[in-house]
Image (cartoon, rainbow, N blue to C red; front, side):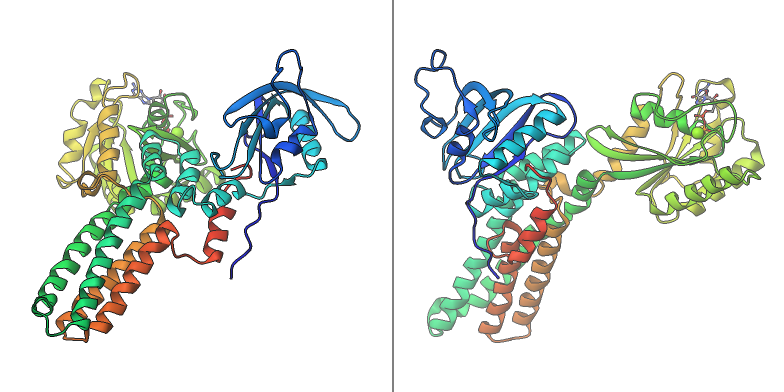
Length: 474
Ligand SMILES: Nc1nc2c(ncn2[C@@H]2O[C@H](COP(=O)(O)OP(=O)(O)O)[C@@H](O)[C@H]2O)c(=O)[nH]1
Ligand SMILES: [Mg+2]
């Protein structure tokens, strides 16, 4: 199913709702310049060379007044920039109109643009046109969205690399190698008596293994990539008053949660996304885990237990005033509630004399693989240790260090995993002595799966689905 490519002029605000210094409208498609001309008045004195937007050279701008073409009402001042096709974001004629950023201004300008012939753009329609015009491949187009939504430095860096084509390049390289293997098979089928045909099988096997290794390396980066794109969910748990909310505030860098000496202050889970050494971390501060008679607090404790089950990591904060037996029970509870999740103990209130031996007391109960991190929310000491623990989880395996490219997108990972399956199938088929043409068909499948990542071979419905997730104006 191919939907026809539309090049009618579309318009949308490229800046978010609310008030701001300026708001920028983007108009793209055939006739964009004339359409904006219907609104625009430019002073001959200031711009003697201006003869309408379509006549403006690309990458130039003018200042003028916008009037509603229906009743000539003055709307706002504007700076109008022209991007002449094909040197624009979409590859079409694009005009950007910068006005003052207010909700009423935005509504009036959009209504005026529509009255002069623009269609309000659908979500992602600009980037979809850029993709269909070959300005971006599919992985690069998806990177635009990731770049916009990235909240931490390493997420931004991964999206920026993908936008620059790093993922497409690596995937293309693997795909090219598969195509070389296909050529080798073709040759062996075509000239079975040729010397090289006898060599074909071992070279083919070696070739498949090499391609598998390279692609597996890329696929392995997804563990890190997923956390960079979606963020790592970290639950802060422990007894009431241990200093959980204080730890959250230190990690957030400001007072997000209420801290109080009254145990049971945090009754609901408090969530906050912070950047920890460039990694987006969704912190979940929980109600202290204890049996409480208070109904609201009990609901909070239930939520805390639920959050523990869904976390990527748990920081369990221990209060230094805890007695010997209580500590043993608390540690047992912590270990039990985080069986399948990486866990670290935070030996809290490290500034108090009572906390002196706390870390060692905890260590006596747990295996050495579980970090025990001394920390003081009062002085900030130990915060870097907590941060290092979180970073170590993202970088576990070190896949991202071996490969310069990080796969962050689940769609890409699924395609790479499917391609790997086909490669393994081809390798095994070869070992079992299946005919070359069968092996060739399986290898071709692997190449097709990889083409889905960049969108060289992808169904219209997948394209639709991807761009529908974009925001309007992108
Ligand atoms: N001395 C000291 N007091 C702390 C520290 N962290 C928290 N507190 C105090 O312990 C009490 C409980 O802290 P809070 O973060 O609300 O604990 P939560 O109930 O676990 O969220 C408050 O009075 C805090 O000021 C710390 O590192 N050192
Ligand atoms: Mg609290």
